[in-house]
Length: 177
Length: 451
Picture 1 (cartoon, helix red, strand yellow):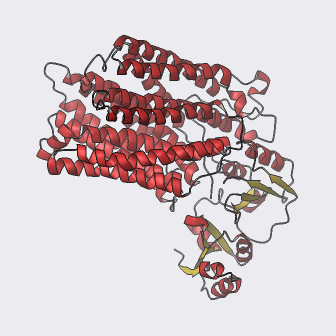
Picture 2: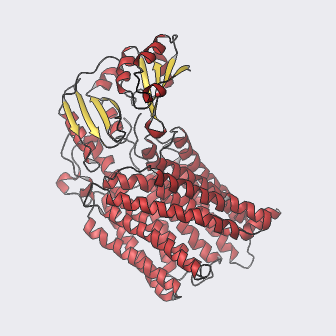
């Protein structure tokens, strides 16, 4: 089991401060095999890439009142803890290229957002990234993306109502082979 | 964050539930049970449990196996357990009905079937609670709609426990003083826990999410919605554990039920306000048949509450209890259930068949799987027949009640044929029906959507 060091940046954020330094200081102080449990007032999407490049995978969970708890786990520990890598989001290694296509599916009747998103992915080539805005977490889309070998990263925007998903074509397929 | 797969056995639950609904309506049309027999007669108990366990509980379990994962955005704990769960529930229900029917014979020896019913229904509902409970436990902290479902599941546990105490006592297997007291005075608690706690509270929780989803309305979790949750939970706590405590202490359950009715009515009022807000704030101007009929069901709930208050004020509540229970079961829960079935069957079938090829080839829309105009007539007939039946009960006209039940039966069969056609893709244009790579769906089992 990974042990986690707790870092709560909610007081800093509420006071209007910038918690990045505080977080990186805690990350640099982690011992091998230790993870970080971060509490924030919004989903800290930018951090996922920064810590991903340092070899940490993340698991974000919304708390009451739009606050978030994110577990950053060292890569090896995380792959041992999670038995279903085929359906997990892509390992957060490295940077993804900028999206080549952006969809705003927020005002479409369900399941139209899923139809449009999948249609767009079929027209793209491996390695390209699609960005889509949705009005809820696309619970039925995710298994279909996994089945087609695409990787994704997603989460609610700070407004708490828009869900933004980035889909990288074929990236889960590449990771599996 | 692996998303949510289609629930493998949900269609089997829906098919079994509809079969029991048809059976119940046929029995009512044939004059079996209330109002021809007294409210507490074994025949009425047969009818009531066919409706509440066979139809409503199987429908709710099947729906929760699919929608609890949607509420919490996590997969169901086990996609295999629902099948043995269903087998236990069906076997247990049949044993329970056999026990009630034995009570009408001369010997009245109903111990064995009641014991079997207690074991099988206890095991079946325990499996359902375990599966849904593990799913919810893994998803803490829970969004508000899922918390309603949690309270609904606690109420289900209370309903089943009380039912087991009743059947073991009636079967002569339990003789403890408190078991006899609870059996003598506890029926109202069993009814409240089942209809208000388990079925209504769970339906309310799921409705918050489904109404917002299908009408493109904002998700609600403001003070009013929280108020509905806390007041409703308080009402159930006063009525169920409070009621049992009151019986054991004083042998009188009325005080706790009256005390529970105040927060209960306040919760219903807040829920009603939320529902009106959801319909008004929707972005989708033209709504589908399922949302229109859900509106009729929600109006039915409001009218049922109003009827109950009016009967209380007139001092006629106990005499017309049958009318209120009938309205809760049919004007509210069954109308909502049939409306949502119409959408869920179409959506699940569409996703199962066409999900794998979306974007790769031309596929039908969900709405191409249904013909709302024709199905709508059966829904109108059903609702009209339900209110005629309630009226007939209120003015004591058993023959008109039987005619109304026959009309409900015909309407249900009409809706069932539409559901069957949807599942068989019979409404989809033949050129679009089975594109390359699509397998036609099995009637009762959903193919797993796992990669």
